[in-house]
Length: 327
Image (cartoon, rainbow, N blue to C red; front, side):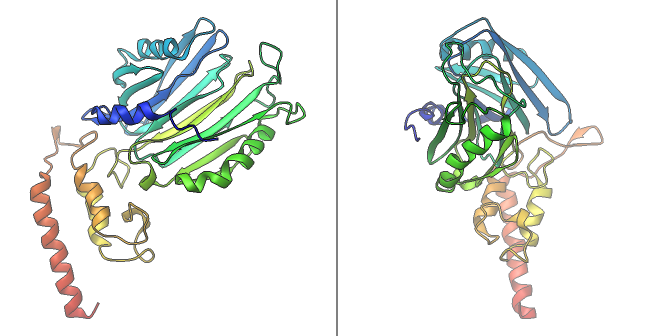
């Protein structure tokens, strides 16, 4: 079902200017109400260095979502890879360099949690262990949740252990959630694939300009429900964590072409054509990310206005050449 208000705080944070800054990409975590004592695990795999950083959030017992969010901020504060952690109600915001975020809710009995970031392209909802405990701590049938959030809104579904005849193997749970979630996902700018013990979520970046993310959770006391999100640097075509000349080149090389024969990498908005909208993404994020180093000194990156002039000149030259050669 769609809940109209659940991620509205995210949009408010963007309007307040909290969505992105020079420190990187803003990650938003939806902290849910916890129903039991446990340890939640948050992993960050840095794209630039290949290093994985792990923190544990100690949950002392049943907590309202706002208190859970504050525990995340405490755990994130002082981490060299997480910048400016802030809790706004049940939402936790912090900035990271491009990379992969993984969140595991171990035995904390959260019916709904989530991870989101701007311009998300890929996420996974993982139903981890081979079998989940089919009853919650109150001896009611356990509930399992999966969903997505994009600029369109939130789409989430649930299935109970009773509906599964208490066959709570991870792949069975994932399949049931897939059957309910996948048919409506395209309306929200996403495609969902069933892959055994996980749901693979592919987002159209045109629908995740503000936020794109995954929702997951369970009232089962078993460990294993996980969410994973790839936080990409907008405008970073070559995946080096920095927006610069190497990202501009594919767009110029494929300018004015349809896909195919143009390289899909240059078609940033996935409209089948390499043009102004694709160029705008690179230019609007020019110089962002972790700057590459040349001989121990920071690389000099042209300012966008100068780049605009150079780009226009190159495009004009290309157009002239094409007219001359009959393209």
